[in-house]
Every structure is written in structure tokens, then in C-alpha cells.
Amino acid sequence: MNRYRWLALPIAAAALAVVPWVTSDTIVQYGINALLVATLAQAWNVIGGFSGYPSFGNSVFYGLGTYGTAIAMAQFHWSFGSGLVFGAVLGVACALLFGIPILRLRGPYFAIATLGLAAVMSAITATVEIAGKNIGLILPLFRGDKLFYELSLILLVAATGTVAWIARSRFGAGLVAIREDEDAAQVMGINTTMYKVAALTVAALFSALAGGIHAYWITFIDPASAFDPSLNVRMVIMTLFGGPGTVLGPVLGAFVLSAVSEVLASQATGVASLFYGFVIVIAVLVMPKGLLDLVQGFRETGWRYFVDNLRRYRI
Amino acid sequence: MQLFGQILVNGILLGGLYGLMGLGMGLVWGVLKIVNLAHGALIMLGGYALYYLYTKAGIDPFLGLPLAMLAMFVLGYLLQTALLNLIVRAAQLNTLLLTFGLDVVFVYLAQLLFTADFRTINPPYAGKNVSISGVVVPYAQFGAFLVALVLAGLLFLVLEKTRTGRAIRATAQNLTAARLYGVNPKRIYAITFGAGAALAGAAGGLYGIVSQITPYIGVTLTAKSFVIAILGGLDKPLGVIGGGLILGIAEAMAALYLDPTYTDIISFGLLVVVLIARPAQLLGRA
Image (cartoon, rainbow over all chains, first blue to last red; front, side, top):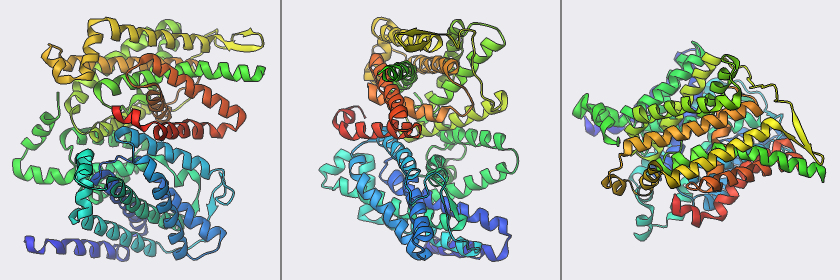
């Protein structure tokens, strides 16, 4: 069985790839959103899960990707491909520029600095002429949900593949060392600054690409939607729910939570969000290491897994 | 010049209230090492508590404030005992996530129970003010400012002079050592979180007097409380009030000289600059 485990991923990806041809439009549209947010969660996983730097500002990269693609297509009349590249370049440049000063901060200080960066970037975008100020930009209309679905799937597979490589590489081991004890990692000869900036850059690249695809799909963007702060929270929660620092956890968490909120949103909005809050609270208490750990732990110790978790971190 | 004076006074009055918001956040953060993302939601709940005390029971808001604080203290004490004590030793991300979940629960409970309408606590003296050489000082705002200062002073005295305060400070410094000296950390944590919730409740009540409450005011207030707690230094109540004043004045000045849309750029830009410019000092505490 274990010999063929690596086959499961390509099969799952292939199964997801045929979805648009066998289901309805609403499912495809829901699928595009789920795939893009899973990509964001996976990108966050690199900086938040592996290096342990809790970024609440990855929406900056998503927003820059969104705006880069939109500006290139709506203002410069470039093609979608060049627009995506332009957006990705903006996102990566931002990660390189702000990564070095901000990654010197640790823990909650880093978290709040990224939060501030996101707020500032959103406000700045709303004052720039070429970005359409507060009003936003309209992209050329292109109807092709299937194409966007497949593009999003390819992006998610690429992000997951990258994370799978990181998890096995020297680079990934360095990031985990930084997460566990940054000073020790530095003493061991890891160039922590370079590792951290590289991790943030990888996260920025995939977030920006997701933003670009979303921009062309939705065809209308404004600062509030491109730099939506709740997006940050969602990608973090999905990663933590699935299992941070693992290869498949963020994807699993994103799919499960997207499905839950989709089902609940069709009922009543207030009650749905309330339930979402309860799910988060209970999940943190009884499965603090995410779904993947839950599956494994439950197989080993059964119901005691939950009791152990409740006991582990209490005072 | 008169305009400048007026804006400065506005900023200072707002800043006192901001300081009170930062106080509860800083206390919980400093002692429990929990960044409480539900802080803004607790502020919001305190606002509603005072609103209903005033409109339903007819108690003057400034007299009702201790009652609202007591209710919030009980809520905070129970939250810590029942939930947060279970995960207080987990990784910081988990505590962040749990308080975020609580935030979501509180916001949507408030939306269901209190509706999304704007509420203002409107005592008869709300519109009255005194003019000092052309600068207008509204009574309600000034009262809120004074209450914030008194509460900060009280917190300082409690932490410095009482037995419980010493136990709180000892727990913050070294949990194991405090335990060895007979401190019961469960109780101390619950009291600290309760006190943080009570301070948030007071801030929320005062916010309801000088501004408007909806279930959704919490998110920005959480972020601002965080900024203020950092600006002021976590373990110094009077420093946190100073942080609040800095933010209040900076926001008021930005709204006047730049544009009201720049207030958020200022408060968060200030934060990023402060964080980057003085990391050595901050890293020591992180």
C-alpha cells in the first residue's frame, strides 16, 4: 500500500481536473474559490507553517497580484499571461523589499507589523491614479469558468508540489529549525535572514498568482476586495485547521472549511458565522495540531486523543 | 492656532480612551502571554452592557460603568477558567486562533441578540460642553478621559501595592517560581483575564458615550489596542495611556492636515515604523 502512496496525489488532482466537465456551473464557481483559497493557505503554510512566522499580511501579495494583473490588462492592454507575470513581479518585489526589515521582528510583533503593512498598502492603493483610486478597475470580460478552474487547479498543484519539495529539502529543514529555535538555527550556520526572506518570497509568488487569476475571473476589483483583511484570517485558520507545516494539511483544511461555510452560508448568514466561530474554538481545544494529526492520532489512541489534547496544554 | 488647539484637545480626549483600550490588552498579553484577538469584541460587549443598563434600567452611564465592568469581569473570569486555561501553555498561534474564534462567536451572538443597528448611549448632558478660550471641551468626552486616567491609576496601584497584584506580576515574570511561592496560577490567570475584560468593558461603555456601537466595531479596536499596548510597553499601565495619547493625537492631526482617509495609514504606518525602528527593545520582550 505504502509503495503506491505517491500515486494518490496525481489521481486526486486528475479527479479534480475532470470536475468541471461533469458537474454544474455553481459547483465550478465554488470550486474556483476553494482552489484559490487553498492556494493561499498553502502559500501561507510556507512562511507560517514551516518557518513559524505568523503573517497576517499575506493579503498584501494577493492584492498586489490582483492589482498588477488588473493594471496590466486594463491600463496597458497587455495579455492575461503578461499581466499575471507583472502581478507576480509586484508581489515578489514587495516581499523582498519589506521582508528584510519586517522579518527581523518575532512572534506577535511580526504578526501585527504584517497586519499594519496590509492596512497601509490597501489605503495607498486607494489613492493611486493608475489603480483607479477608490473606484477600482474593470478588466476585459472573458467567460470561461472551466479555464479558470483548471488554471486554479494547476496553481494549487504547483504550490503543493513546491511545499512537498520544501518539506524534503535542506531549505525546508532550515525553516523548521528557525521555527523551533531561531537563535540555535543561526548558531548552527543557517543564514536565517536569507531563509526567511526566501520563504516569504515563495509565499508572495503563489499568493500574487492566485490574486491575478481571481482578478481576471471576477473582472472587477477594488481596494476593499483585493486587500480584504478577512482573507488573511481565512488562510491562517484553514492552514491551522488542516495542519500547519504539513504538505496536505492546508489543502485539506481549506476544502473542509470552504465546504462548511458554503453549506452554512446558504442557510442564514449570522447563524452560519456563529457556527464557524464555535468550530474554531472547539477545534483548537480538541485538535490543536490540525486534521491530519487528528486522523493519525485517532488511529493510534482512539478517543483518548481528544482527552490527551485537552490535558496537554492546560495549566 | 485655535483650530490646532481644538484638534489637540480632541486627540488627547480620544487618546485617553484609546489608552484604556490598550490597558486591558497589554495586561492580558503581559501576564498570560496571550494576544487576545477577542479584545475588541469584549469592548463591544461592554458597550452593549452599559447601553442596556442606561436604556432599560435607567442608570446614569457613569454610575452604571462599575456594574458593566463587574459583568465583564465575571465573563472574563469564566472564559479563562473554562476555556483559555486549557490551552494557555500551547503555541501562541493556538491561543491566537482560539481568541479569534471567540471573537467571531461574540460578534455574531451580538448581531443576533442586539441587531446590527447603531447604538449610542445618550445621557442628557451628552451635547453639553465648556469653552476654554475658544477650545470646546465636551463634558461626556472629558468625563470618559478622566475615567480612563482613574482606571489606569487604579490598575497601577493594584499591581504595585496589593497582594494579588504582586502575585500577578510574579506570575508574569516567572510562572514556576511564583508557583513555588504558593501562587495559584489558575486563579491569577482568571483574575487577570477578568480584569482585562473589565477594562475592555469600561472602554466599550465610554466608547458608547462618545461614539456609536455596532456588533462590528471590534476588529479595528483590537488592532488599535494592540498598537497602543506596543507603543506604551506591555507592563506599564501609565505608559499604555501614553501610547493611547500618541495614537489619538496622531489620528486627530492626520484627519485635519491630510485627509480623514489617512487616519488608518497613520496609525498603522506609525506602528510599522516604530516596530522596525526599535526592534532591539521590542525583541527583548517578544
